[in-house]
Image (cartoon, rainbow, N blue to C red; front, side, top):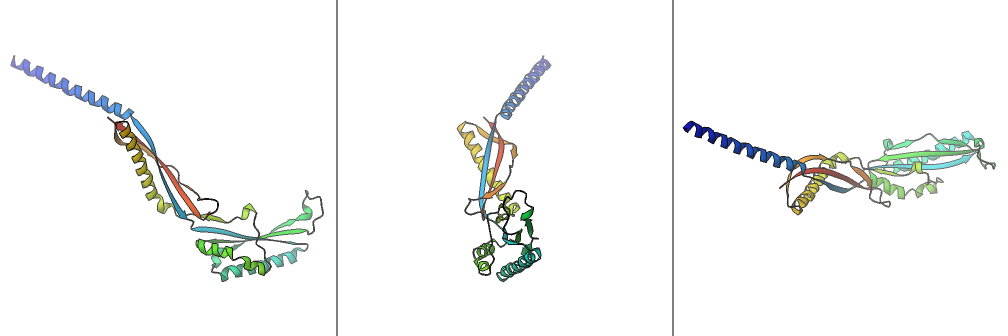
Length: 233
């Protein structure tokens, strides 16, 4: 009889333990089905640290050797102007001139005033953005020497870049993740739940854009992180 009582007691305890385990498992399963997906944004304004400045001018003529001589002379004047204003030689590149034979143009109905149209480009690439920007505003000095730097050609626009993204990535990801958690905690509180562990996360893509059209030398860096959290009762 005593052994029978012991056996029944053991069975009862086993059933209770099994019931508790099943109940915990079911609750845990339910919790895993409850997920909140949130996004965290991080933005930062940074100055561009690289500038590319194409100095483009055009010349017209009927004699190719004379045209090449004129272009080379003007190129030397431009390079001297740049160097005298602190631009290093390794920051200057001179491209071969583009020559367009106007008489060979099939779509020209009228006889051109000059046969050849030459385009020459000297490009400054520098990490000292402010120095080059100041020099750009002083290029009228070239006009006094008979050289007109022209614009309007989309191929030769000034460009600004930010190349130090890896230096600010960790801090921005941390901020974006923190903002995502704040949003998740607010959702959990409003839904009378508790925030659980992270199920998974997606860092998202970094984007670098001009702050606005008037200040292309100031960049806006942006990243959106997506994080999925479990919710608990």
